[in-house]
Structures are given as structure tokens and as C-alpha cells.
Image (cartoon, rainbow over all chains, first blue to last red; front, side, top):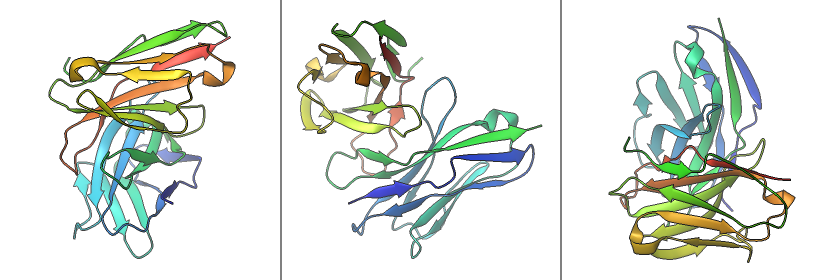
Length: 115
Length: 114
């Protein structure tokens, strides 16, 4: 069965510092996609970054980068130069097997950026 | 605003009542998803539409739940005879057909059953 595990319920980081949010996944499919979403208190899920299983390089999007370690089945999100507006829930997700492209989410990590 | 729109944003209802939520996806997206998110959890898949066809339903979608997407545009999710356990955030998402594209989510409808 496919599964996403996020073991950090909450994290603190000082403003302007970098933070790593952990994500491990389990799948037997050779082809899969991994996503990170941010959910502020307003509720909307905001797409941050995507990593395909066959991508040779780690994905980067501005201050976000994904540390993809295929052999360890981990896809950690790194946020550089944290800002107060980064305070939110962060969810790691995997595209499920099959044709629907539905997502399987982890339980999330609540990030608090301190001034 | 060309994002995914959900209505209402909040709904409080008495146990046993029926409720209906609406989702307007991004206009050119043919894929539409409904997810449910309970407190402290990530979203869980409920159902999927490709155009107007409902192609997959989760076992979470009991007989009291029904979803439609007439003409492949907006979608509605109806819950009949609501129960307290239905209290959750209901999220709608849409995407293109291409494999590696992300899904865009609406702001959700928060349902409270009292």
C-alpha cells in the first residue's frame, strides 16, 4: 500500500534561518510523483514543489527545495531564509497508483516561524 | 479570480439535515477531486471526476454522500442525513490531464454538524 509519513507534528524556526521538514514514503510503483503543499489557517492548500521519481535533480522553486533520496524513500522539504508568512501546516503528498492522479497525504507538520 | 472556488466557506447544520456544497474548478481543468480533511489529519480522497464522469469513489463515500459534475463544469457534493462524524473540511481540487501536473485546491468548506 502507498503511504506518506511525516514524523514531525510541529517545528519552530527563527526568521531568516533554514528549516527541513521530513517526509518518507512507501510505494512499490517504479513511477511516482511527490508533492509538497502549504496550508495556512485560511484552509487553502497551496502547491509548493513537485518531484518526479525519474527526475535526476532535486526540484527547486525559489526558497523551496526538495531533498530527494530515492534509496531512502525520503523527500524532505527545505525552506531557506524563513519568513513569518511561512508559518502554516505543510503536507507531503504522493500521486497514487492508477489513472486518477489522486493524492495521498501525510499528517502534516505545523511550522512556526519566530521573529 | 481564476482559482478554484468553493461555496459556502462555512456551514453549520443540525444532525439529520441535508447539506450541499459547490465547487467551481479552474475552467480549463477536466479533472476534479473532492477530499475530506478532519482535524489534525491530511486530506483524504473522496471522489474523482474526469469531465462529467465520476470515475472513482473512495470507500469513505458512504451511501449518504453523492457527488455530481453536470456538463463537466462545476461540481456539487451532497451529504444526506448528516452525522456528527461528518464534521470536517471538504476540499475541492482540479487539474489538467497531464501526469505530472499539480492539483489546485479551493479554500474548502468547513462543515460543523451539531
